[in-house]
Length: 224
Image: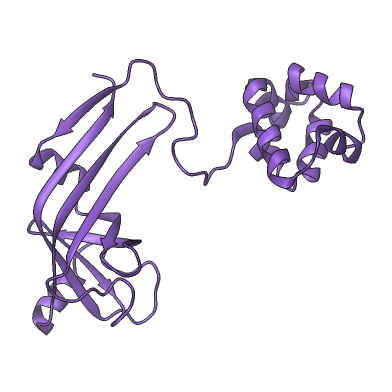
């Protein structure tokens, strides 16, 4: 007998989770249960049974449901790969720990993706940037006069976090500090050699911004 990986994945899928994804997607599209069943070429009663029995009962039926919901068979089985964090249930007996400054810098690492919070009008704005760490300051490149090019001396926040939904654990580090521009060409050349400083967004981004933190705090949630 040939091995069918899709059927194996369907057998491993949690029927309750698949049913929830179908219901959420149906509600998002404004479809009633009867409309979904009709468009998927099945009776409402059969749809209910399929949701209760799980996707392995009728993989072809689930594929028709996915088509009606304008999603994929794989997303109904596993959920969106790019879904925002926090959609899983919290872990049992979660514990919250405060991180020391050294632990915060250890987690930030040498480079990565973070979010800068800027005091703009009519309300504060947050933008993702790829950063590098230089002598316990944050540096990144941006376009002149762009949204992530604040004035010298601006008070900003900078946050880096990592979430592992499978294990219901993660951490978050927050820096509060002030901005300064790197105007010295030699210093800019040096920073350009640091890992992670090539802008992900591409384009002409000749402005170097440095955040000197006045305060750094962090938290970790998970098991002991």
